[in-house]
Length: 553
Image (spheres, rainbow, N blue to C red):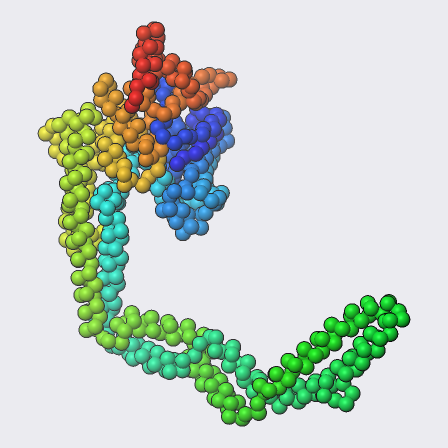
């Protein structure tokens, strides 16, 4: 959800710091007070393009920041990780700076980011309904994903895309074979020899270190035996040895400490040395037992080293890189058909195509059933939203050879009035109709929609009375699963909200400044009374406003 929005020196806003709550929030106020400026500011921080006229007159720059709670949005968390833009846990902070000269900078979690990155992220966080350029539902990809989510076919759609890419890769490999058959056959033969030779060598990077250590030990075993025997002779086995000498010293001093307790500190130093010399003797004897003057083992180690060095020289790599070379050769050989030729490639391509078709046809079946249900439910919802007689359709247009997203294109179409031809959503002329249609779609699909924040502008354009009450009820229902915000002039919609903000405009120092305040219960009565009664507000109007706020919506 959206936690905070900070605005500095933007159009007629000097300074605003807004904290948002879950549920349904409405923004109300006189026409021209600056309600849409808040949406424009949020759009900019979400990646929309800017111009110099947006910086408040007389200011060097405008700055907008928005903080989102993303703990329940794994797709957003994953996107941030992939783009190396992760910030504080469960938090995403966006910031946009607009210079008066026209320059613009964007930041995600404090890191400079491109507008394209911010836009991609914004499309996962907020959907603004009412203005064509902000509508996610106008994008073909969003329409397809919406239908797939409604059909509970998101995982299947991803499997179709993976199957399609696998099929296309095998088709590319086969085409490459056909174009370069002779050269590829030669390359494949070379790779087969290379893989066979390196596989027989059975060499690993771990073995290289062990082999070098074994060879050093075996090559110098005589010197090692001599050094160990000298150490044993000196420490314990000689006529005059360190262990016997230390033992004697400890014994004499132990007896002497009866006469002077001051010797105890010295004994405390010598006794551990006595124990450590004894431990060293035990370890040296155990080590000596493992040393063996075996020329055959040395020859084996030298032969293994020669084989590894020979292979490394042949392929012009360091010995420790031979396993990596084998893996790369095997991968390339697999690309060229795994050593089985063009016939095997064609078989694999054909099998991959069959897998793709089976998955894509299953997806088509799910989409067709979901399209019928979605079309019917949204059409029904339109009848109550001042679009009586209108019709909605989730249309499936067949794609000749299929594609990464299946065997058809998905297009959402609408006829807003009786007898009106069904046209793509992007061709719907009225912002109010588009906003109400978006509300109907979001309400029908609210159980599967993933966007956490929904903002509606112009949703009340051209409606009133009973329809306005229905719109308020639908927004309230939608807010059970999403954070919903709405700019409205209708008291019926405002009364349905959990929170109400009032936007006002006043003159400060000869310039107009817009501000926002959160209304208390009594202030809401006054504001809704204003919306009901206009300039003159009577006691009857106030009672009506209070009654509306007391309704169980």
